[in-house]
Image (cartoon, rainbow, N blue to C red; front, side):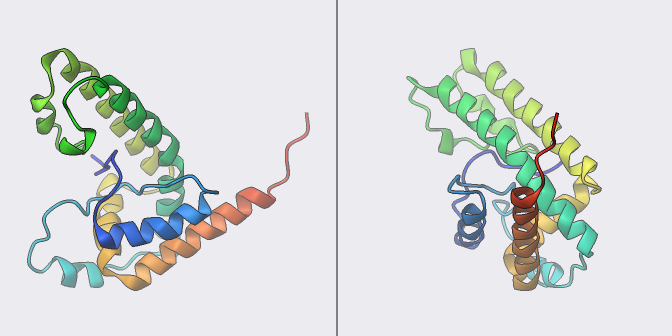
Length: 175
C-alpha cells in the first residue's frame, strides 16, 4: 500500500522540499505523501543515493503528488473536524496508510469514522499512483529516496513546475 501521510511534515528536509513545491500550488500549501517519517535505518541514505528513477517515473510521481493533494487535504480536514472538541491533537496520531494502529488511542466513538476516512484516502491515493504508471512500492521507494538525493529532489521539483506550467497554459475546452 502506498505510504502516505495526511498531516503536514515536520522533517526539515521534507519541509524544505515542500516549501518550494508550495510555490507551485498557487499559495495553497502542498504536502507530499512521505515515507520520511519512518525511522532512518543504517544504509538507507546509501540506498537512496543509488536509486535510478526514469524521467517517466519522475513525471508519474509528480502527477501523483499533485493529484493526491486535494483528497489528502479533504481527508485531513474531515479528521480535524471530527477531533474538534476532543482533547486529541491531530498531530499526535499517525495517519499513515501503512500504520493505522495509533488510531486506537482515539476515543472509541471516533475511531471507526477516522479509520474509514484514512482507509478511503489511502485507497484513493493508491489508485492515483497506479493510474500514473507507478507501482505503490516504487512510489514509496521514490518518496523515501528524495530527501537524501538532491538530484532526485530537483528532478521532482522540475517535473512539478512543468506540470503546473502545462496546466496553466492548457487551452480551455469549448462546449
